[in-house]
Image 1: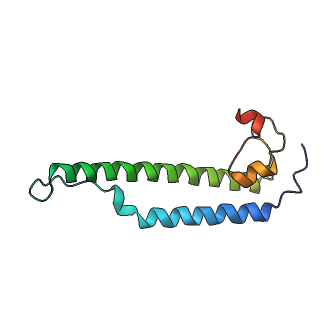
Image 2: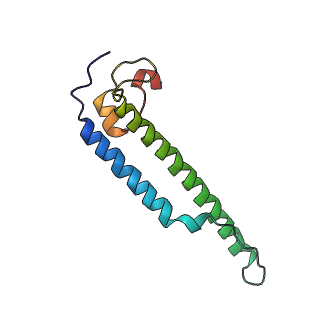
Image 3: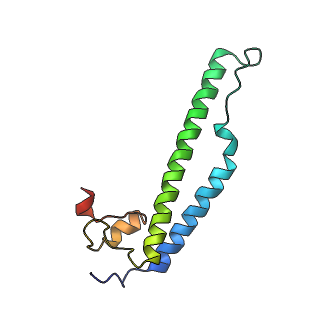
Length: 114
């Protein structure tokens, strides 16, 4: 396997841990956003209920995306622990450092990503 020793693993690990902490903080601060919308016609008009339902759907999608990103971060940290970070999971070649700087969770080289 090629040598990824030039990669600053500590830098990428810190970036991933910081991003995970921020995503976790955001998830906790927006916990109530995806709660079921109460359909009390006495309190809300039809458009207000529609706005609330749309807001709920958007909050759920945002939470799903946060979960996917947390899974990608955890997978990247696991590759670091197994000394496989910086190598493509498909072909085993080095992932370009610029690609990792753009997205430190990326598991593949540019050729395999195509």
